[in-house]
Image (cartoon, rainbow, N blue to C red; front, side, top):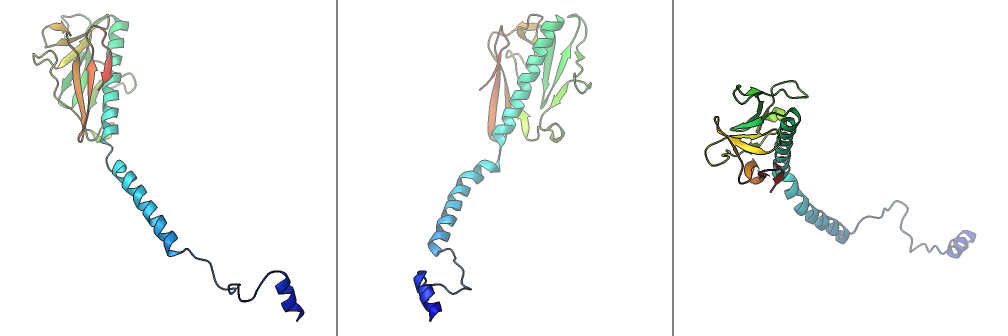
Length: 192
């Protein structure tokens, strides 16, 4: 009798207690709430994870801008014209000592290879990124250059003509595209 009296004094009623082997579990309502929350979260997150064409296009545009800035800086620091020739999905950085000399490929400062950048190339990390055909100045010119003051011009293989309107280079990845614009006179590059 003493045992029953002690249990009652502690507030434990034998009928109100769950049996020792029983475990608490989630109710059906709690499980349904979690499933609904996970469904909403996945509906928001999964479409964003499926394709990152915007990031690929942005990376390609940043690469084009950095190479244009490098060519402009080389032209100013070495006091001679530097060119970037666009052919399909690649471009090559070129230079020459005199305007009568042939164009020579610039050596990449890091890899020590010819300065050629190829888009839509898995090894370069540009898989799925392409360049639209360029036409600087409307005359079919595919070469953009910078003079010894850093002013941009287009070159058709015979004549260097200063830009009078922004030159544009379109970088694509899937359905996403970005346009790199090079301003006349200053050579400032921006992405739209």
